[in-house]
Image 1: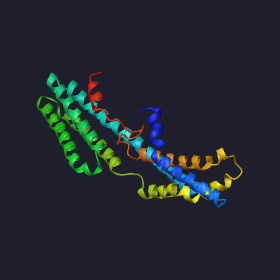
Image 2 (image 1 turned 135 degrees about the vertical axis):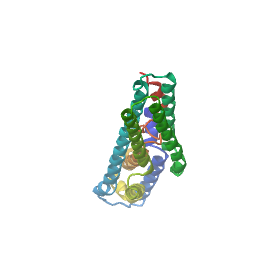
Image 3 (image 1 turned 180 degrees about the vertical axis):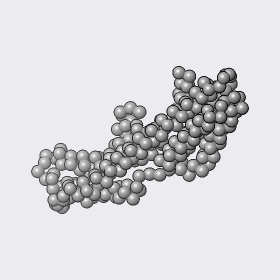
Image 4 (image 1 turned 30 degrees about the vertical axis):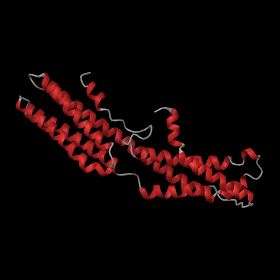
Length: 257
């Protein structure tokens, strides 16, 4: 995603609408001499601090999701190595089979994480089915001479893959505190109305071209922060520049490297 698209996410239609409201109300207050010296510290306490906290927490969830995805891939590769290297006699069909099974697992995980939350129950069944196929693959390797200790270790790899998937799924299903996000949005959307008299006051001695600089800057800044928080909220929805990209095709292609 390029810089232009990134700006489109931060400064969007919502920014334009609220900025327009802010400018219109400031003009009305200037026209009718409605002015007030409102404290800017109120904005910091009521709006900026909560939304910056939400952004920080959302980014931590994204970093956790990245680490979990790394674990999922690492143990997938370990399972591939076990199939390729641990048997006395390795058949090409075995390595091709594990590639296909790992591809199916990652595809099903991606499909779930990219889907709507209402579809989770249905897509979970597909994910667990693919993991079950991996477990059966280890059983087949056992029948081909894989020692029991090595088979147990391979099953541990699958267990750790499942653990990573379950934690990724919970990040996908649950969000940062909804009440805090809604609280921030209320104050962000009400700022153009509540602070119009203040914008009018600070603009009294300014040239006509600078009258609306303060409402434009303040409104776009607050809405931009809100948009950043929204695009970080779900690290798997592929909306935004910081989302976790799950690419099973590339992973499988590079397995033999």
